[in-house]
Image (cartoon, rainbow, N blue to C red; front, side, top):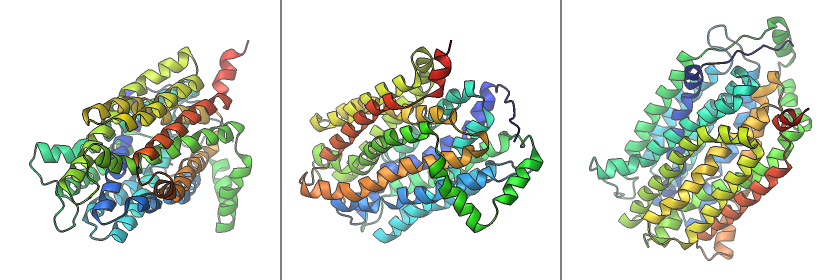
Length: 443
């Protein structure tokens, strides 16, 4: 199939095609910041939190490669290849965000988490492929950095919403009769609206290029029709993964064990260690939940700033070097939480986590995009998500037992374990082959 020569896009074209990630991260940030709090409020024990969270990574494991495969084989004269998936995912995710804080029982919250995560993944995966579709190799790092900028901005605002409702709008932050606090409910309502409108911005203000050889595209799509062929194509990709993708998979494993640990256990850790409350129905625990939102807003804000610095640093050194340094900073920052006893000081390690988060969302995808065939970009980006969700599934299965049997339910020690995993991921980056390094060192 012929390859399209991709023109250099303007700043605003890259802005428009990335803006939808503002809403996507709005949804993810509300999920990551408040899910443990919601589960605990509805009666979940601390050592069961990681198991209850499994709905999210398992959903991603199933959804992303399938959506990637189908988006590769989609073309509509008006809506293009990726944008139909952006739109449908945004509608479903917005509905789930209105349902999540109205869960009255634990099983309902787990079910809605599954629905919400599936819907967010339908939108998110094609966004990663969209950069590979639209941008030439020179601009791909900038494209992923722009996505990271919007991820940071969306994460900041979404994470702060419960505190804004409490401190500035006088909304109650205390559970009544075991229900989710109004601050959390209203935050999810705002998030649902922002999600839909942000993705709609990208759908309406971006365009997509038709396949250069439409006859070849249609012939390939026809050959891939049928459930058996579809399943064969999806599963067969594992045996054809580029070497760079395999190497990045190992880095991703330890990175996402660390991130999953942070998202699940920061709230109970801060509630226990700083706010001195393990009772999810207490005002102190809910106050800790709000403060975790501020902490997560800090790392989101730092990542938004760092997103524009990382490409420049990568040009001066290499993408691998930048990723190694960022992950090491983030891992050591997570470990340091163990020694902090005041809530204000907890913001300091979030600076380091934000630097790592910016790199996690930029460098692996930029490295990977250069190693993938253009006509399978969506599928391989979806397949790459296996190495985001599998470590979370492993962590979800084992962390509760580790917490109970080895850490005496001191959840901050899980954060330390996560930090050590992130430092290890940084070291493993040295073994990744980046084609950009080969090009830059060629005579």
